[in-house]
Amino acid sequence: MSQLRSNFLRHVAQTSSEPLGIEVASAHGCVIVDKSGRQYLDLLSGIGVASVGHAHPEVVQAVKRQADRYLHTMVYGEHIQEPQVQLAEQLAHVAPSPLSVTYFTNSGAEAIEGALKTARKYTGRTRFVSFLGSFHGDTFGALSVGGNPLYRVPFEPLLPTVTFLPFDDLQALERIDDTVAAVLIEPIQGEGGVRIPSDGFLQRLQERCHAVGALLIFDEVITGFGRTGRLFACEHWQVAPDILVLAKALGGGMPLGAFISTPEIMRTLTHDPPLAHVTTFGGHPVCCAAGLASLQVLLRDKLPQRAQVVGEAMLERLRELLGLGGLTAVRGRGLLIALEFASPEATKDFVQRCFDANVLLGWTLHRDTVVRLAPPLIISPEEIDHAVTVMRKALQTV
Ligand code: PLP
Image (cartoon, rainbow, N blue to C red; front, side, top):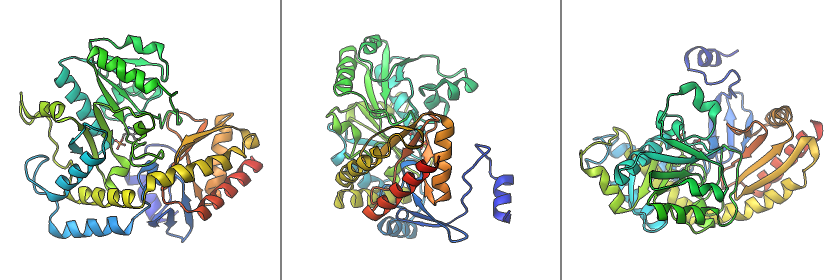
């Protein structure tokens, strides 16, 4: 075992007994190279982060340029920092109307926390509604609205005022009433196994929220920035939330999260008391510079449209593998794709065989029978060809 690996195991806090443990030397585009020179085709993108590819040259350039100007100067919201303002302005252009004011954080979970606090303060209500199978992050607030008891129960007591409804169940929406501050939903559930709601569900949810005065929060941490073939997944159904939560691909590989809402809702954070929600590093200028460069690449190179076309072609190729090696279902939108297996063992075997053939993919946090694919949106036809060939072989040998 290398010294680096043994120090990793000894000194870096571990979160599982079987870490992937790749000793990363470099990462560019869709390829991660380890210290022995082994090249992996990355179909996970650091779980939905590297949408423009690893270390995109324009993102790296923006980071270097900003690092030469200034790093951190003041807690969020006090100084006027150009990259932050420019990114917020761009987000106002592309976010569903009328969302035009952004609060930046360091991560998705923090953005969820901010959105929940804003909703409570704005509405003066305490209850939240979330959905079974959802994942919103691992801080106490975000965990409280996470729809999987396996991850919640060991940390209870959490926020006591959360009701969980079944995903994509129209009838259950009647349980949303005028005591609810906000309803939180991933328009397409990611960790829950890439679950896509039926047409009409999100519209009905929005109508119900409007009828009872609850805010609708869309968590697009994984689905945002072109992943599902639209810039934001909610565009598939033309439903705009009251608050949109973003992270992962937002920073182009740097840590950045955000929640975006209307001027009226966001004003609630300025008073009674002022400074009730601040963060030291949220919206770091280097991260915002990276985010701005990444968004420009994404829009200029039409990566959401690309994800739509390439994703459909990939789905079609993957459907041809149904029935092999315990593969029972293939579904997805754009380049967020799920492969469902008959058993956890078949899933694990498949992931391991792909890994042995230098293709990185993973099972989802909440569903041990679902493999999730979320490659960089720049993945080439040759790389897809190679990935499908490896997956076919892996299934044939399971
Ligand atoms: N929301 C969703 C839908 C996610 O998939 C995740 C992370 O996987 C989060 C929130 C939490 O984001 P972070 O890990 O940046 O805190």
